[in-house]
Image 1 (spheres, rainbow, N blue to C red):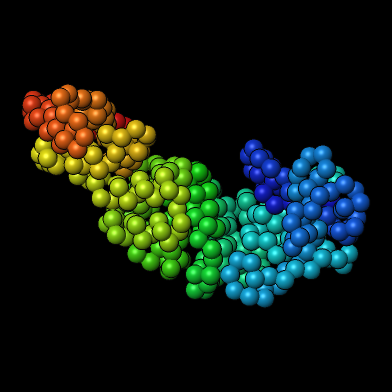
Image 2: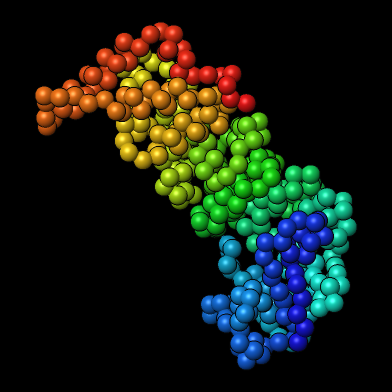
Length: 360
């Protein structure tokens, strides 16, 4: 029974990056061996176990064979005859197919160390094409390592795999997108997908080039920034997209509101009193919660402008009260009071609601 540190931890050690978590492969062991040493099995369908003290994952060395379509259509095999090299061969990229033994010696049967030095993202073997999710994983690694290049044959292989992307669950596609948004250069995620034609069914009506440029130019990061998909697309396209990917509610709501009202709010002086009131109300500026702040922040991110004055004015409008009326008449009276407040605003203040020079 031999234990090896594998995958991303080895890669990040060699790159001098912080190692967030460690994964291990155990060669020459059985389920009985692992359970007898106090390991706890994760689920029933996979030979992965949690260490009784550290909680780190230890997987029995295994081989896999594609049996169906999609991300989970695999049959795996474990046994004493499965070698470390067999286990590493089923992995996605050479830079993730390295291991360290108990003496900290590097085991690199597929050239991952050389590819790290050459800054290349290269698939390990033809088994790469059996899992369509790897198209998105490679795009995410391109976002993680912006100075790395996807190797030509790997890119070609990805192009042959796009027809199976429809078999992936929406949750996994969204997860890869959200992870990519937290990397060094999220725009490379979209750019890589565009280059290999990974559009249908998830992105077939999304302008990946425009999204790439927006993220690159404005240096956007974080999963919430993905709501900016609404900036360059219609409300119909945006709504269809967030529904298709089962995007979390806060992000999907912000994306569709941004598509409907975002560009109008960058020029409030052209909206007039009625229009400005309608759009502020439409983004939730008069309700409790952070919905309006979400939209203001997204607009500022997309345009690199300062909406501090508009935010402040919206709060002034939200704080208005009227007296002497109740029930349904109160809402109508409050709207009238807000309109009068907008109409009385000096022209010079209207022009100051948006500042294009304060933000950098």
